[in-house]
Length: 208
Ligand SMILES: NC(=O)c1ccc[n+]([C@@H]2O[C@H](COP(=O)([O-])OP(=O)(O)OC[C@H]3O[C@@H](n4cnc5c(N)ncnc54)[C@H](OP(=O)(O)O)[C@@H]3O)[C@@H](O)[C@H]2O)c1
Image (cartoon, rainbow, N blue to C red; front, side, top):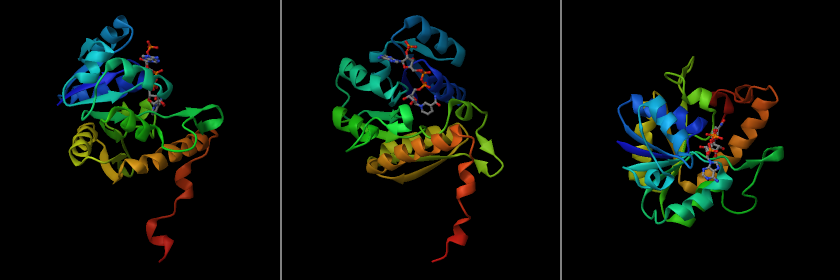
């Protein structure tokens, strides 16, 4: 596939690197051309502008801070129907969602652009995505995906598989609100040194 990446930071590298190694053609776009060139060189990709990345190939990854997204999207122009992968976490001080009441980040991006948005890759850190592969004692890392468009979900599932993960479609884009909130909750536990897995009994123990 051909994937554009908006942003040249940690998530851009942690996802773009494995996708490039898996044989996908990547174009990295950043506001600073030298950072786009440096990242492209590190991961074996092409460098370009944010505008070029937004339009490149089959899908574009938004690897930007959530509070920068609306400004960047307004600048790159029409994206109706494009597959946009949203890995953002709209989390502010105190680990609260900066989207507040109403729709979460992914739904706001979809409403603003008319793009086919898939929420994915937001729930863990670049250190996990850049493992080769992200496989642990229980097997490949599960990647929850939320979206309303089957073709877009299948495309993102392929990207997750190609980096050694196990994609799991958990529901429509409306479910991304819960995934975004759950991620803020998990980050709070991880930051305070707790292991969220210890809260989860085996499913069979839950009873009827
Ligand atoms: N880091 C994590 O643990 C993690 C995990 C999952 C999801 N996420 C989410 O992934 C997204 C990217 O995170 P990251 O860790 O990759 O951040 P990062 O390393 O700080 O990179 C952010 C990128 O966004 C660019 N950017 C910032 N403001 C911009 C603006 N106004 N216009 C254009 N470009 C702008 C930066 O460009 P410059 O270099 O020019 O500043 C940089 O290329 C965020 O939404 C974050 O919440 C992060």
